[in-house]
Image (cartoon, rainbow, N blue to C red; front, top):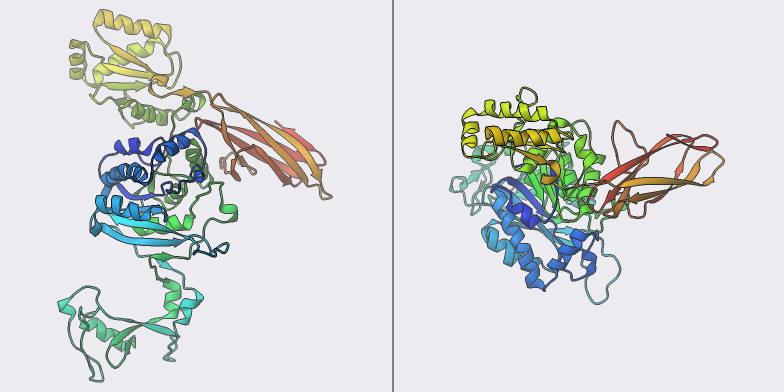
Length: 563
């Protein structure tokens, strides 16, 4: 399965194309059942269409809409995998009973995580504030990946460490030494150094007798009249942290500069905890309701492989810009799968990367081999060879050479296809010249060799990317030579403009790193110091296509825009 992909489209149809049991972790934050229009977040065509489908009926329709998607998620989840479904009070009971329990089984329910997302907020005099979300955690089987997580001790936690033996170890607290399961081999009577005997708890001790003896020698056992408890020290817990419970009140909702303009954006700390807890490095993480892209950004940073899906163009492009912002030399490559692609990006991208990508889009298997391929870049499902030319107006020599290469590639298959009047291979290019088309006809008529010419725009839709210009106005200046400047970007596209993004410290080597991710108006006012400034604005249209304008300003007594 191709990984590290941002996919624009209906997640139901996309998930149906995934192979079974291929994903390690799924986190989904579907639109909540609230019957309020704020669930239309981005406002673009794909999301509005999804919104209308989702709210065609009441709660039953919503549950059906969500269930058919979770059915596919259950199918593609690995046996050791986990799913975390984020919801709120409007439908959490319905989701658990009618979807998760039925699909995953009650025995595979692991926990109900309560995330306190806000403070109490404004006073409510006839009710209690609803300031928490529910995150249901289910697994595919009873054996699953889990990595223990901890959280920092707060001041209230520290107050519980109120015992001290004055032996230099500091304050400590105690905990029972009781086994959570029935363990007959740990059901024994422990006799202390002072000959006092303690009968085991009903399930048995947590440690065997030898380990108990070691703990006693190290003065880590706390003896009461009827039981033995283990000492744990504040100094150690401050380093290791305390065990995490299912009440998460230590992660704040997204605040201040972390906001990207997405109203239901989840904090990165929340996803970092879930991903770290339920997956390992290089595992595949799926977010089928990508939204603001937090799951993808965190997965990428934590060295997971990932797939993000959303019906909103804006969601896909915002996620891409977030990835660009944290990209460095060690970041894994990724692909963005849109409804339409612009000619310039495809025509002038890396040739080898383009070959692999377009063959996959065509339904074939790329050779993934640089050089020495003898003119064959991949093969179709029936083994027929494919050649890709990342150019226009392909000439007659390409056709002649390919007919020879196709025969050398698999002589028996070549002769079989000729005998049954079937194409011996495919050539993919942006366009074909008159000579190439005539040579294909000659080979077919005179030698019964049928070569299929396929234009790129027959495989994927190609559109013209938007254009953008920027108008600059000086608003005021101070005594230190600093200038307040207004930038107004104006984009144009047949599809319509979706949003703008700005990078106020653009570096060509590092690439576009958004200072402002979402700007619906294309207007920014900033204060610039004396010196040279490189500023980039990116425009995104409703098809997800983009373009960028770079402005170089020199501020020294006057504002000068340089080419």
